[in-house]
Length: 309
Image (cartoon, helix red, strand yellow):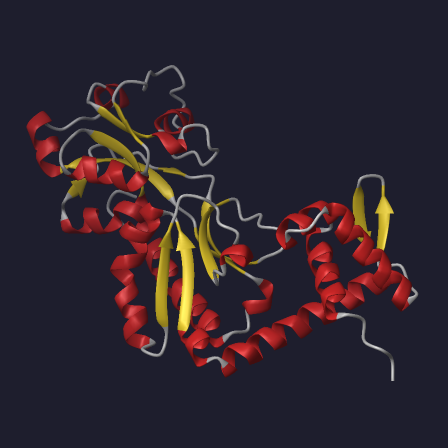
């Protein structure tokens, strides 16, 4: 019977194989790059085969490395799943992280449906603007608004998004109907400062560029550090905001917000569910993923049917 290499060596190799980088693996494991490199070399010596091709400043898995990485990932996934089943408290708790605006404006209004359907799962929501390290923080999953490139994680596309101008109904009534971009820009503009230059195309400048109005000026108005605050300010009548449909869909449906000028452009970012690969088979993760995909599909479908589309 072949002797099994140390479990920690296999773990280090799996992380390095996922990132194809000793430096990134070291950061995840809270070790030095040298320690990770030595551990992988020791594993290669013990097995008697190279696991990586070291090419210039990058790594490539050898055929043996790819085969071992697949098996090690599956083994750790099985171990994680088994331990979770044995630990009922852990099996019940589902910890997710997402932007505060997405948590309050999209997830929370829908979360009661998940809880009603899954009374055996206790959901813990971490609303944080930072991109938290799921492994280091002990978090099961994240809902991310981005380009979908999350190396080392299992990624599930959820829904695209779009932006449109919105204001309170009383604000719109007090100023009367408008028909042009120039007329809209005369109104007090409200800005989400986090979107300016982040590449999401969710800001006024990007909206104007998409509508071939790069000549127009949109710098005036108040700025807010978070989309939830921006939307709250808009509901209270401070001005007109450019908002993501996903975050204002409920307000548009109940009339708290209206779209004074129905010119809508897509965002460059979309929503994704990001999960640690070793946790994807856990029942709580699978059930949350299936539910989340359904809710996201319904939101995306509603956006296509909306009168402002």
